[in-house]
Image (cartoon, rainbow, N blue to C red; front, side):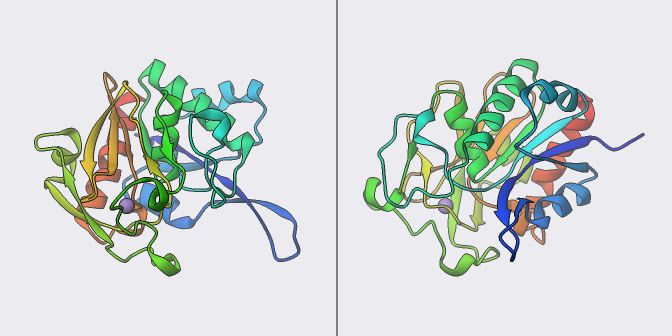
Length: 240
Ligand code: MN
């Protein structure tokens, strides 16, 4: 049986000569492969008329991390730290998330991908956590230390995520300066940081619509992370 095809959304960057490129850290690709999926990169500059063709061939979609989502899409406070806004990426990913919801096709959101899922269904974001959430923890661990376990998350007892990772308490990395503020009514919280920030969500009435604020793709030496990717890839396999 062929492996499920997992589309992974991408960002933009420039090479050392200043030429534009399509960007995705390999950790996402490796994590999907290790879980038995076949990763395919999705450039944001696909024409809308071509999304359909690509979409039909995907068994699941991973919304990867990246820059901040434009304030055009949710009711949030302008802040000087808002950065790397990419209108084409926002448009593609928001449309994809709504489509996946309609059709019950599995998806996993990571970091920006978690925020994207909330915004896609009418939720809002803290546009800079420290200035907007009293008592906030340090969620942007300095120096891009992606494998540092920065804070615990408490999982909803008996919830979907606790079931998948087989624990109700996890230590996670934390590489985000924005976070979920008002949760969309279509979503359920599955995990919280000690400061109350929601760090994982699921789309209600969907076979597998999960998103986490941390980066499990950098923690695949931990079985909880491997369980999460495996559950996603297996859901895509069942759907496809
Ligand atoms: Mn965090």
